[in-house]
Image 1 (cartoon, rainbow, N blue to C red):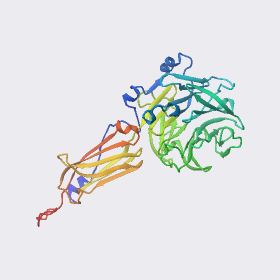
Image 2: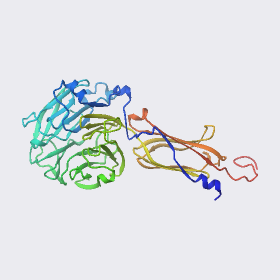
Image 3: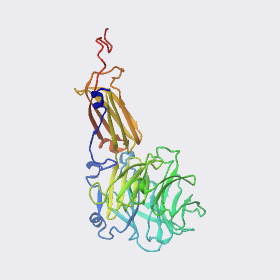
Length: 436
């Protein structure tokens, strides 16, 4: 290999803009008027000082069928429910402009004691793990109010997490009993029992309108007091992750997105970790603090799968993000006649990657379409679309990487890399489609 070939084979860093992490991104100003974080001051204004953030725990969000006045055009207007465990309340948006409260510390029918998990569905059902009272509380949304419908107490010791499946089942974790319980309905007194060490947070997936793979049904459960994240299928553990897999400290509450990726909060490390369906670590987001890309001891997570909206409960507030995308661990290798590129996609993404010549003319499209999360690869051998070798010189790879959710119209990353190639050998003849 001559000196030119050796030099062009060296790996080079690429430019990726914006450089900030894109796993989670901020909603556009027109969507939320620039408000994507609510704290104690906002809560005091909306509730008149009736309650403060005190040990926030589980979150749930849903598009209520009753709010579907404009069909799908207003599908991003969600009902969000948050558990304020220290005060025994559920805090929720009673309307699109006001907050409501349900509960209060105590053991009466309409009170809660140290609640944790919460789940909701479009028909107005809300279920809460009323941990201190050893029961699951089933509520019904009636306009701006939450009304108690059923108290599930049979055999419960320390109910912690709850989830609603697409077919109406109520999934619950009982930490002290060491079990995941699957109730067919609120009246079911003989649930399916799956033994699991000290389970807490839980999420379920499959069969729903906004589930990508409707035939894939599984649950994600945090167990071992946050030391493990597992997936359950047909009552058996099929996958496992531990905090050391993602540089974390411990797991709290999981949620599952449209593609079946599992997100889980890590309050101790002030991070959110993202795993794929097989619990392979895709990315982590956040660091301790109260800045835009920092998290203040996050606990509950909620996601609206259709549009990729994510809500995060923090120690003294809540955050609102959209799912974005990122390309990490990029390796660009220059070859004498082209290049090879590899990277790690944190999200299924639409990618358009093109090679341009020194005049900015597109000479080859090397990728155009959807790419799954995980390893992404593309390469170019120095030829045009007809397979003819192009002249030696300077070229540029330009790639646009977009998420597939609503953020795709507002957020993308652009990768650029300039490189040189050698041309075809000079034989003295006119080739490349001409006469000889």
